[in-house]
Image (cartoon, rainbow, N blue to C red; front, top):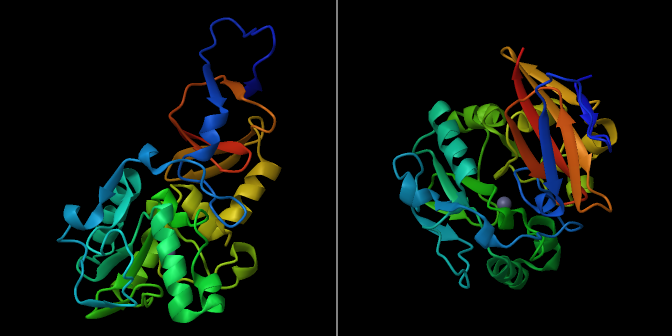
Length: 292
Ligand SMILES: [Zn+2]
């Protein structure tokens, strides 16, 4: 075992190079693995994100606004031409589209939304489609993944696009896009068969950036984010990471509980690159990368 929770005395063997990490309760509410759903509303403010406009950055890759949108929402603060994502998610999305040779075949329909925009969509959809449809396909204001800046609705480029339920048929380059998505950190967030857990209908158009290798593990194990975080919480710790290996890299994934704690400190007997994400529940996920 190469990890120990720091002892009260702070004693470590001589000549050991170790890594000391400390985390605070604010870390819970941000990062690529945060869970936002009807039970876990968004807690951070949008100003905390580094958002970029997909369409203004990459007109050669995406096919922005190729025609008219059906279900055009009159109250939207920003029209369709502006679709924002967090920078890391945007960069990986462009790499994924290039790798799938899907340039020009995909339109970004909806990315980051403010709580006010989500409220507009909620109210507008209720007035157009009724309550049952809205509750199936539209998240309540405050509880939408789109408020994270990590979720994107995509459509096959076409003369007219349905804003609420865009067509994204899994064929041709779009099938390649879907198959490659996990390697680039994306998951299909609301798959068929998981409606009882996600409480959202099957949405073939809605992708969520959770980061690699979490995206690959979730896809391989057919777990949605709710299930994946529960598994990490139940089965991992600094002494018992979930280990993922690919192409000579070994990646350790560790859940750290912040329940009733403002701060947590962890020490490892080796120094490694790592990423950190809150869960927006009561803990954080630490991911450590090593070459085997
Ligand atoms: Zn969506």
